[in-house]
Image 1 (cartoon, rainbow, N blue to C red):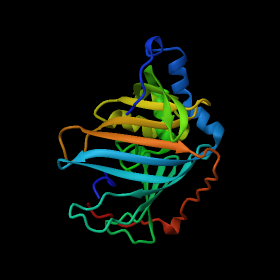
Image 2 (cartoon, rainbow, N blue to C red):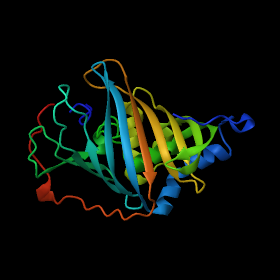
Image 3 (cartoon, helix red, strand yellow):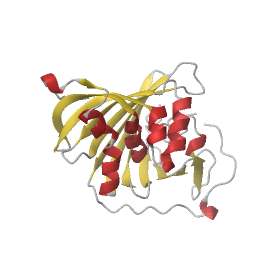
Image 4 (cartoon, rainbow, N blue to C red):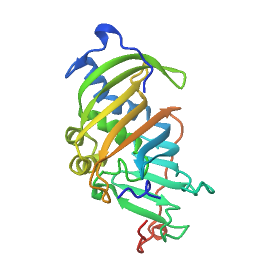
Amino acid sequence: MLCVCLAGSGCAERGAAAQDGRGGEAVDRVRHAADRLVEERSARARTAMEMATGGTRVTIRGEGVYDFRERRGRLKVLLPQDPAGSTAQRPILELLSPGALYMKNRGAGVPADKWVRVETGSLTDGNLVTGGATDPFAAAEVLRGARTVRYVGEGEVGGTPVRHYRGTADLGVAAREASAGNAAALAAAAKGFATADVPFDVYLDDAGRIRKVRHRFSFVNGRQSTAVAVTSTTLMYDFGTPARVRLPAGDDIYAGRIAER
């Protein structure tokens, strides 16, 4: 169940540089991009998740900060307007941590002052889709499973020069290579998605840091028999910005029944 969701490149290819690679420099650079984020400690992040539902394409957007060493983040996730186009819904506040997702303003019968806690390893998509925003470090660790990588060319993201790479990652391989906090979630996604192969585009700056990464997931929603294409985009910037994230106390977590949406 997609619990939140239910509430390109202009770079030119450059001759010999734009070749496929199953090993070598391009694959290594992409696979180790997550390590560069840890070295930088933290960053601001913006997310966008696009999917088609009911014949309409919707986009869910998020913005916040992430601590790559502590594996904790805080996002404000904005849902699309309802079909009538009335007042936009309240943002959902999300706290990301190893093995767990916390959501506030969740609705569905949850008191406004309470958090909902979800074990990410229990989700069939490993929370790459469910929360309406892919955990920025999980997005980077998907790249640890990169099997083929092609250098597309140079460009800019937010005014920063970048190198654009395109390829396919294997979620099963990513799960085996991931940090302890993401291994179970990525393993769940490898089994739960329609395919473990994830096409991606990633844009790395001169220091090897991810400035933008886009994944295309094939997700089987429990309400549909056919796979749903979900595109998740994460942008990272202002590296080193303070990103202190405090998780809710036990008394602040809702323990009651959550209504179906």
